[in-house]
Length: 215
Ligand SMILES: Nc1nc2c(ncn2[C@@H]2O[C@H](COP(=O)(O)OP(=O)(O)O)[C@@H](O)[C@H]2O)c(=O)[nH]1
Ligand SMILES: [Mg+2]
Image (cartoon, rainbow, N blue to C red; front, side, top):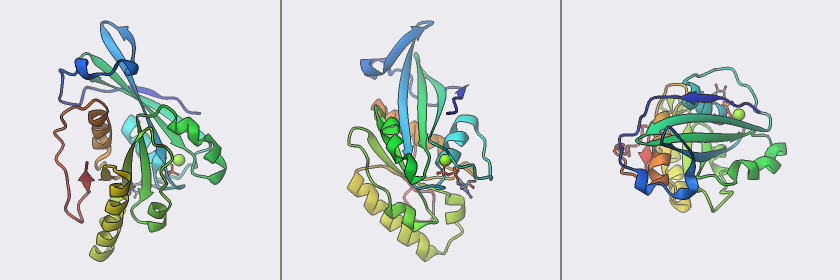
């Protein structure tokens, strides 16, 4: 299990949010700050890019080399939002079938689950299954940089199907690229906004061929 802690500058715009933070999220107060933990689980087929997205978000790094995740990976990143320190606790499950028994560890107490599929491999979308009803689902299409190079028709077909899945799951749909830094920060900002019912200023993107951001 890998544990990394990183801090970064505040990103979300809203500041007056203290009142909206549900008590269940609050942890000990340091220097008058509330520490709020948001657990985010990531699930999806092997090699869709779960670990890459997590590492890109937490460390702003991208590594081409494929390192298979064994079991469960865990990373934490803290952002400041007004008087609150928000710690994203991100859980990433190894794709291999044998790790499926660890799924409850990833989903338990999660605020959001990112159901991830590879935009260039349709089979990975088909295999998206909702594992829990307690966490807020997000449908995340990965490797948008490669997807953008595909034929228009193929892009339309995948986008249509992804929208159908997202609608059925009542989930936001976001296409991203850890490789080209597209929509990576925005995923977590939207998770935060949804969790605390904050006003979100991120512009939706709905045009086929562009990195879809529908929430
Ligand atoms: N081109 C491109 N490759 C990616 C992207 N995200 C991940 N990959 C590659 O896809 C492979 C699998 O990624 P990984 O994060 O290990 O997938 P996981 O098994 O779901 O954790 C690796 O070789 C990554 O470098 C992306 O956004 N664009
Ligand atoms: Mg992995």
